[in-house]
Image 1 (spheres, rainbow, N blue to C red):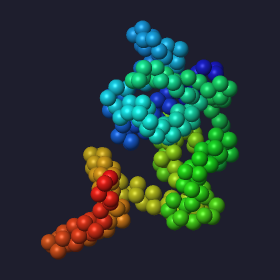
Image 2 (image 1 turned 180 degrees about the vertical axis):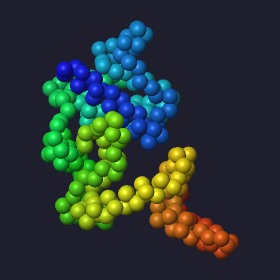
Image 3 (image 1 turned 90 degrees about the vertical axis):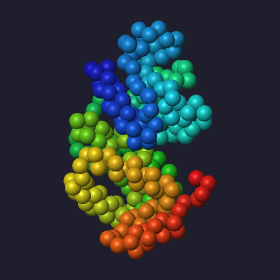
Image 4 (image 1 turned 30 degrees about the vertical axis):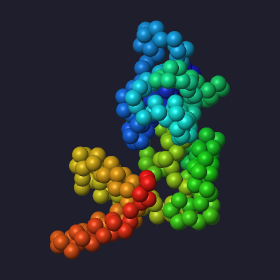
Length: 245
């Protein structure tokens, strides 16, 4: 029973890490190897683990071996009840946290928010935000808001999300955010899957080079005439981020 519950957590962790690496654009050539297949390779490391992640030219290799920020990666692995250890510089094995309760909780979603694992995750989100609302900057009491939920088939618990999927919000902004996200999902119904896949990297690229407000203002300025195009370009010129980025 315990091993089965652990195995299910392991599979959810595999899915969550894969999705996170895709979102962060660091997946590259990284891939998971089931432990039986790994042992058959007769590698010197990781044979006592539950699962192995292999990465060579992936950006993950640089992050893990050359002092990159691993906080979100570490937190996500721990959220499922595991820890990892590097073998070679290009692989890691995952191991169970001693004493972790892998059994699934019954009860309502609200009752799961009382779990110590969610309380810990929420506290981390608020600390990373400097105990300020990430929408309005207020220092009043904050909620940790899930900006998205995973596919229901995965059945992720509230604490089994990457830190970047959560946002510290005051009560007023939390209510507004929920409405805004519903409207955005409704708008997404008008786009094809290809258009949705193109939307995120396009906006991500634009706001890397230009201030977020400038990017959206320039889009709003577009129109049928040349003057509209020039106005949009001027907004972008004035809204460039630092040249040394």
